[in-house]
Image (cartoon, rainbow, N blue to C red):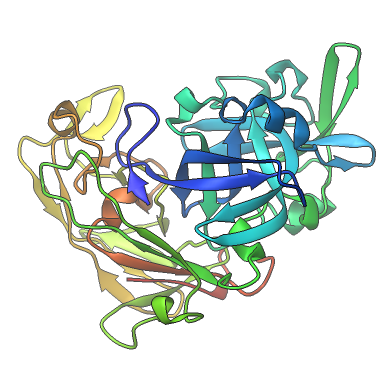
Length: 365
C-alpha cells in the first residue's frame, strides 16, 4: 500500500485491484485505487477501465431495470451503474462482487423522490477523485443494507430504463446481495477484517510512504491480534465510536477514516484561507483528543497540527500533521492518524446492523 496518487493529492493511500469479468480470463489490473476505511465497496471510474472491460462488465438489473447507485462522500457524490466482477487484491479473490462504475450514466438521467446526484458537480472521473477508484473496506458489509432492500425511495439505489438515446432513472429497492459490497467480506478466507500498517513520517512530510494492507485478523500467522499493548474499542456496525472529546468538549461522533486526507474536527485555529478548510497555525500545535468505544474503553491520541499551506507547498504526499475544520461536531481521524501505527479494523459478523447500536466490530491500535 502506497500513499501517492494519480494526480497531485496528499494523504491518499493506494492499492492495485485485478478486475475480471466473472468466471473468465478477461481481466484488467487497475493501479492507484484509494483505500477507504470509511466506506464500503469498490467504486471504479469509467475512465480507468479499458474499452474491453467497459463493455464486458455486465450491469445488474432488478425488475428489468438497470441498477444505478448515488453514493455520497464528504466532498461530493458519485453516480453510475452497479456491475458484477471478480476481484483479486493481494492474492485474495472475491467472486461475483457488485461494484460501482462511476461516470457511465449521464447526470440528466438521475431522478427519483430525492436524488442528490441530479444536481451539483459529480466526482466521477480519475482526476476528480485523484485516483482510479475507491476501495471501501470499512466495518460494514453493504453500502446501504436492509433499508435499501425494503424501501424504494432510499436515496441510494435507482432503476434505469433507456428509450432511444434517453436514459431515465427512478427510485428502486435493491436486494442486499446486489448492493455494492465490501469485497473483503466475500473472500473465501481472511475475510473478518483488515490490518493497516503505515510507517511514521517526519513533521515536514514525505514524498512517499509505503505500508502494508493485510487481510484477516487472527486467521493466519501474519495477522494475529496482539494480546497486550494495544487499545481495542468496539464500534457500531458502520465503524463509529461511541464518543470523543477534545479540551472538555464532547463530539457527536468519531471515526477512523483513511479516505479523509486530514484530521478533521472543530478548532479555533486559524484557517489558511476563508474558503480553504485546512488549519494554518503560525507554528505546530499539539492536540490530544480522547475517544471511547461502545465497550467503554477510552484512550487518548496525541496529534500535531501544522501549517497546511506551508506543508503542501513543499511538494510532499504523506503528512501526519494536516488538520482541517469539520462542522457537525464530529472528529474524523483521517489518514494522518494512520502514519506510524498498526491499525486493526475488525468486521461485524452480522451482515447488517443499525447505527448507534453496539456490535462486535472494533478498531484497535
